[in-house]
Length: 522
Image (cartoon, rainbow, N blue to C red; front, side, top):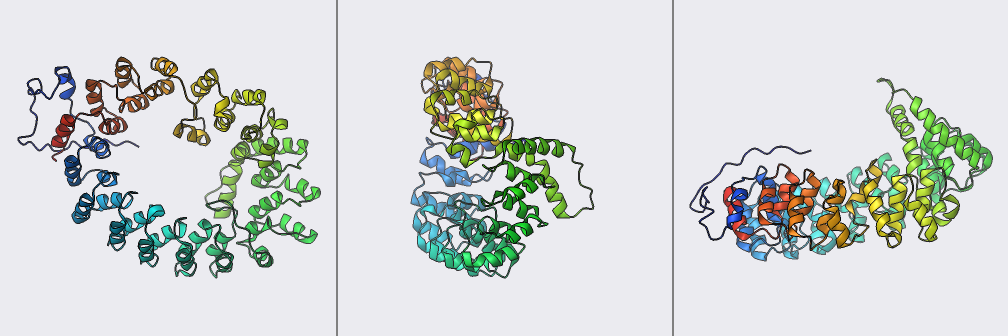
């Protein structure tokens, strides 16, 4: 959400440019006068952009240490000298230090120094960027008095195994649970400790149907009987157990739908129980039967129809029902979406029979295969469902011809959250000729691609800088061929995102950087 930032008080001194002086100042081009009188609406965002501007001179970087708006982004710059780092630490501002602790280029001696800082958020930030951290820093933090710091260490894949193992005996069960959920490949001795922890939340995290990382751990076989007997670990243990007939029947009638859903995934599930679970009251259980490779096609079709029909007819739960009932209601209404987003490895392994499947998830799973013939790829690239087209394009971008690439991007609408990832990647590439054509395209998404051409003509860049769409103005703000008057206008843009992108442009003249800093009172 965007918030309007209050006007910043102006500090006028002898460096402050005065209205009317730009034309007589040789540092300012006459053509810039109209743009120069525009004061940034979001000065704090412009300064955030300036803080990360790769062309910002070192003396100006130092001046930004006095900026008390925003998140102290200047401390995150990769080009800080050791003198600058020492200066930031001496200032002892929370946001500057937090940003500094997140800086991957921070020298080891400063990380070790910050590991005993009084601000727990600073210490936690050090752990978040522990990939390049010295062991001494982590040794100082492993017994940190703050639980958040230790939890980050428990989650962190870069925490040395011997130090991480110590957290299995942490006094806080939340830390032990975080360790169980995130350290999926912990040594067996550690996993045994967590699987037999006296706290239910720890055991549940250690034997779960959900883990933060793959591959998921497999419980030791000798512990499986106890894990199946324990209600909090039963669901996580089902898929790993060898089940006799009596146990199968008992689990099929378990009151916990998650247990029944895991049973529906079991490779040794007999057909008779598969038919029972195909009509289970919990739609989440039916979804698991739908996804099985051995489910007959008529049963699969019945499940697909029933899930959609029943989820639409479900009434909202009454206010006085228990939490488990509410949770089941949420799972049931989400079941149609789950059917749609399933990714089935057995389909990906043998994709050809499924490229014309009536089920979106089957076609998307087929599109994840790298062994499809060209004609099958073409069909999936033109699928009616966006998630299928994008999956196929991501799997085989080298097989996407220019016309198809343009068609895919032109049709992209982010119809659900499961295709948002496409916006974060440049999977498909376009020629300079196509990108310049996009600059005047009616579709805003395509116009925002035009600045990917490093040699985009300045007149097109200027046109894009006046585009009504924020995403387009944001994309062109850092372009090297953007005329300075257009860049200056973007500094005063009504959008915070655009203003920040303009401030970060490495083609912003030093004189204009100076003007901005003066406006900010620096």
